[in-house]
Amino acid sequence: MASVVAPAWRSGASSHLRRCAASPLAVHASRRYATAPSRNRIVRELDRASRISSSKMTKEQSMSQMQKLANAEYFKDGGGPLFPGTFVALPLSRYPRNPRELAQYQWNRMKHWLVGAVSVLNFKLKSMPNWTTRPKWKARRGKIAPTAKAMYREMLEAFAEGDKVTLRKICLSEFAKKLVAAVDRRDPKERVRFEVVKYTKPLFYPRLVSHQIHQVNPFDKVMVTEQAVVAISSTQQASRHSAATGETIPGSLKLQDKIEYVVLSRQANQKTFETGPWRIWGTTSATTLQRHLEEKAVIDREQARRAGITKSGRE
Image (spheres, helix red, strand yellow):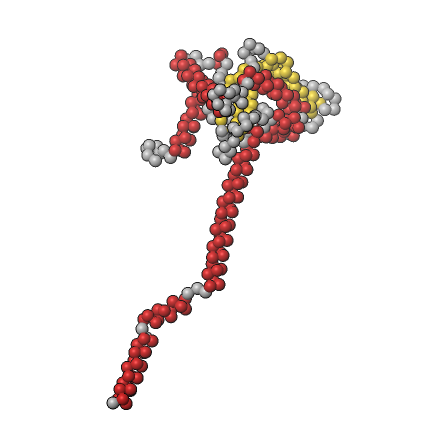
């Protein structure tokens, strides 16, 4: 009996082992084991992923830092563009003659004057620690026009003499570069002379026609830019002379009556409320009604684009 059972058991066991060896579970387990990554490979993949992530973060940080540095250089000492919507009133003799256009011009002039006045007042109030103390920052509007007058005369004389050091000192970087480039283009055999013969219309000029202070650098929450436009009326004389003989070059003498709009700019600190020195941004022109409406249309389109508004009015 035992001899019969034993072969049967062996036969059954052998058949069971064969079935186990051929079972799908055994096959799948074997395949999983064969394709599973080694520990070294996992470590290498993790290191690679870490390097890629670190490189991406460093690149993003460096690009952001570069953009911040570029903005800081662009807006340094009050640099940057003229404030959008700056309104420089025309002389009374050039005001629109049409009553409707005159009313529209005066309305826009007053509206932009109010915007500038509010910006200056807000900064002044911000500099007050509390309502019972005096403000730390003062506009000193009465000193702006004489300062612009003196600085602009100094700039014109330095430009005529080719004094690049003075030009870089009193002018903002971009404007100074243009003036220096113009000096470098001059004929070395010639010299330029300049003279303010007299300042004209002293009852009306020099006159502060625009004064605003705004935060313009999106990466800088401390510094703000203060801009002022001053109208100056004068009679100027310019001429070119031979460097060898000093004689005036025929046809080079020019005598002109001018009204010029000089833009001054500087930065102010929103924490200490200290300001830097005024620098000459450049010059601008008086605002006509047509120019104002065109500029307003451009600003409105840009604001709509940034807000994501399409022509159909949907976002």
